[in-house]
Image (cartoon, rainbow, N blue to C red; front, side, top):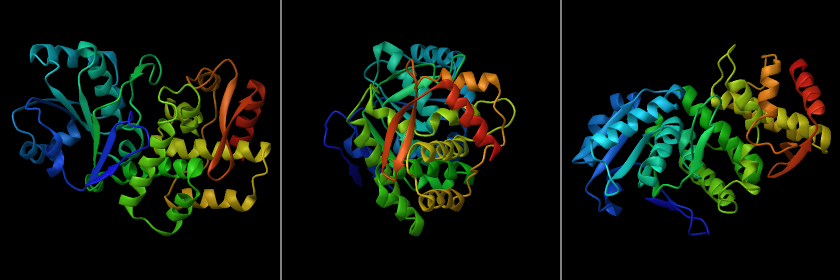
Length: 339
């Protein structure tokens, strides 16, 4: 079992293994509450029963629609009826949506009860489970939420091979993002090799390293939003459905498009980045025309101050926050659509 640690002790431990058998080695609590979505229930419920005894559980529907206030009310009512208190430990088994929703529910119940994350998708293992962010959607994406760290994260990398191909692919958009942000070696490693265990370890370490320098996203942590402002805009449109990975890949290409205007970005490097996205079968062009509502979403995105801040790349492994004028950004959006 691999333990991924950072220099600072405040950040929670991330355990990596190919089985859940060793999870009981560091747990002495007898009372468990398990939370998972319907997909996990169908695939792994009998398997989970072997490793967790005398537990209570609740099942939620699969998908982004579960992240709302009505689901929160159902969860809180269940916890009150079952007399869940601070002696219980909550295990959240599922992808990024379930982690976001259930972590927020746990952090707001009895002013916070202990919870652990067992992410089951590649995207949640290397991205959403790390950093303590949790939220629900209220009129817009991730409007209500907080930062509340779990006790630990237990990553079973063998479980991701049960996922659909599209869900597995979505995780690689974030892995490519980490390589562009902070690790040139990882970027070129993805060209030649595909050892999933090493890739997960490196990705978790990069994100943990960035978060340990800025826990509450006051300044430095915002670099993790590379490509996400554009991505959230096209992800939540009502015309065409994009997965998170597809929208992030297009968002990163747009950032590179912007970076090439402001900095001396070599054409050979741009070709290498595009080739890497194409290697994992990502879309690199947005065929969706921006409406005024979508442009307003970009401007009113939670990642902006009074000025429009955009994360740009100077070179592979080095990024910078750039203040952009609203009019300039709209011109670039139109040009990017016309390419």
